Length: 422
Image (cartoon, rainbow, N blue to C red; front, top):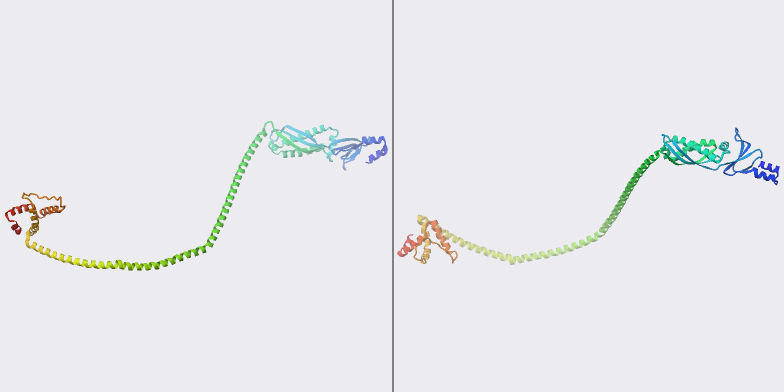
């Protein structure tokens, strides 16, 4: 400002010379640039001085005949990077594509390096210089990394490249704002095979993760179902407990009434049974008396009568037995006295009446065998015939012969005398 005041004082503010000074020697610096007034000696630090002065973000007047003014653009420069056949660690040639944002340093002391090396160069030349520098640094970084490291972690790769290129760019007065790796590939398809392997691994991991997620989901669903069922069972159990408690309370409440009701019924039945017992007791006595009068007394009388009658019959039978026994005894004594002819005499005595009856009805025929057939009177004649046959077999007396003899004797009048003799 002192220089401007001095020049205006020399040429005057209202003269044409003053306007020329303002128009041609007065410079305004934009925020995105720096003004360099070469020709003036400026002390940078205690040990260094330069032959120019800098103006950034302001304005100044060039000293005529002593200074020359230069402008240096500080805006970003976008540089497309591409490195082909850059051998990585392991000998695999790679091609790397990227983009970098570079600008001229606007801060001291780096700006002095830019003024010394880049002042007067076109923007295109500066970009080419920066591109060549970055590509050289890129090749150096690739030589220390494997293709897997370059491909898997591009951010680390870019950071390593920034650290490698920072010193070289600072010496040129440049600042690397940003670096992005766009693409990495190789002509031998090494990275493609790695990519396919990684893709297969990713697919495998994805499927494993999916299977694990499904398993976890199934486990979670089962766990939720188990919890739900347990809660439902617990709820049903609580409901059942509440219902049981309610029933117990109802039963306890009703127990007294039911007991009283049952006791009244039982007492009523007991009273009824007791009354019925008294009635039945009287009825038993009545029935016993009636049985005594209707059945027992007549039965006892009939029993006494039967006993008396039985005694009488028994006495009669005993007497008859005694008489028969006595007769039998006398018969036995007669048989014993008669000797061997006693049996025939006894039989002849018994057959006499019978033979007389039979002889009156028999014609005068010679009888060899006597056969009796009973067709009218049932079993009477049959019994007689059977008796005659049994007599012949047991005693040896032939009734037919006897009958013939009797007929012959009747004619001669000897029947009675023969029987008497027999």
